[in-house]
Image (cartoon, rainbow, N blue to C red; front, side, top):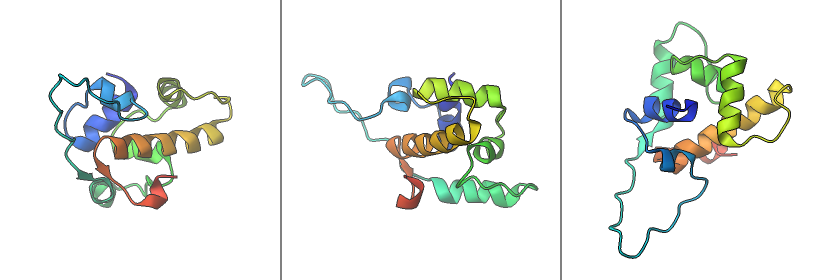
Length: 125
């Protein structure tokens, strides 16, 4: 499973189909295909704030991809974040980890929202 797929699975509590996890925009279904049910809505803030309240570390998941990955009990190493950047199509310099991390956080927030995550506008920059 991809790193993004793992993040989505941990938030939504089930595996998210790869096409939905990586799609940047919804695509139209062929006319003959039955309409797929919309993904269930998950209050991402409530879920992650709940996990943060139980965690002994003070993790700022709302601003940090590293802290979000730690909160989800995932490897947040530079190598893993570089892999996530590759999965999401990052074209910047991966050696500039601060810029990459900011971009990754924004992309992950957008992917969560696109897959049924309820997030406030300030987290969807």
